[in-house]
Amino acid sequence: MRILIVEDEKDIAEFVQKTLLAESHAVDVARDGVNGEALAMSEPYDLIILDIMLPKKDGLAVLNSLRVSGLHTPVLLLTARGEVADRVAGLDAGADDYLVKPFAVSELRARVRALLRRASLEKTSLLSAGDLTLDTATQEVWVDSRSIELTRREFAILTYLLHNKNRLVSKGMIAEHVWDYHFNSDYNLIEVYIRRLRQKIERFSKFKLIHTIRNGGYSLRDPRQ
Ligand code: CA
Image 1 (cartoon, rainbow, N blue to C red):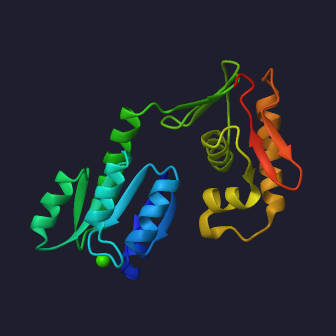
Image 2: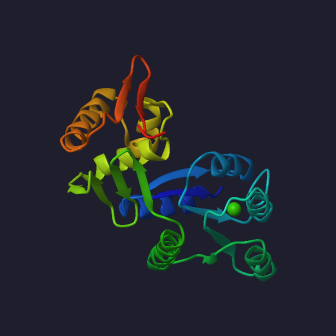
């Protein structure tokens, strides 16, 4: 799952990020409200962890803008002790849950799991193109009704391509979204993963789904659209 953390306190942001990366989530961090809101509106996150006291635009104002814009991504608010009024205002503004600082890592993990589970039950978890279907909730992939086995990284790349179906996806975008900051700029690695993905999919598919765009990157095209 892909998670956005909007938190200006470096120690807390790093602690949350480390915890979520260890659970195999892809994590982005924004350090202020304006940047956080821009990311939340432009990227398909499964969960947003939002601090209330933020520079440039506070968390409640960010939350309000997101909900007014029709974005329903689950939001977990981070609040300081004593900000009871803010917590109530946050829940009223459409937050799904909150955590009071300082919090234990086990509590963070439990809240995140609960919110992601609820979100995946509410929204359809199926992505598809042609005879390819991927279930983001169960992490299963089928081609022409046959189940195929993917590694975690292959699964993440395919999910990202499907989220951006019929659009050009550069290697830089894949590096950024699937590897976060761990990626050390060797795009050959992405080519290797794409080749393997293609082999696994095209073994059963009636279609050519993943197209290489010269000097550009890749595009997963739905032959029925
Ligand atoms: Ca803060």
